[in-house]
Image (cartoon, rainbow, N blue to C red; front, side, top):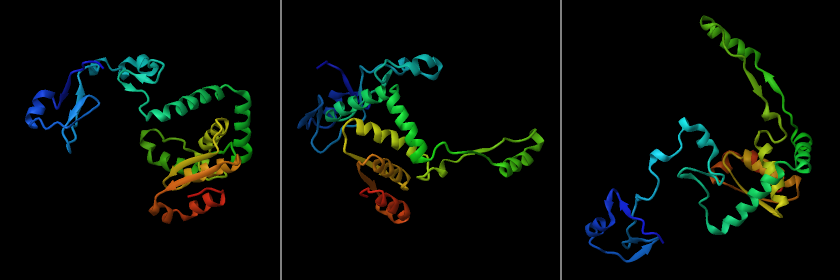
Length: 227
């Protein structure tokens, strides 16, 4: 382990310990911790200075990163070690199916026949006229179009994403998909995607949301999901 100097709230650790009467009972990640006391705002002085962090003014560096999901001191994966292997498998499979003709053809067919895409682009004539009248003094207003994703068979755009995720999960050998939802639209989309591919589906939803969005809860259950 490197001998990285540690400061707490701008003071050397030794001074902080003196102020806390040296009541040290354990060591966590190399930092002495007083029992029943959480040491906060720990700053490792080995971190790169903020001046070295890519900014919008250096757009190429900001967007490019280092190829491992890191952008200066930002980015990366910070998850429990037990999740690293599944996440790597997911990343590898995702990168593969991006250019896999068979996968893309199946996804396109499912989006067309199961979801009802492509949804129409609707010109909102009266709304456009309303804002043009308001903006006459400035030379007219915008032309307003509505992308009618609400006309898909699941009632929102969320199925577009959920369907592809379920397909990747199936390729990875997963038998069940677990999702969380607020108003219920994502839950309905996930349940519909799982029903399409005969996968189990579990949706977590808050008690108050279940009461307010009972119609979406019913749709999820009709699609075979456990809510």
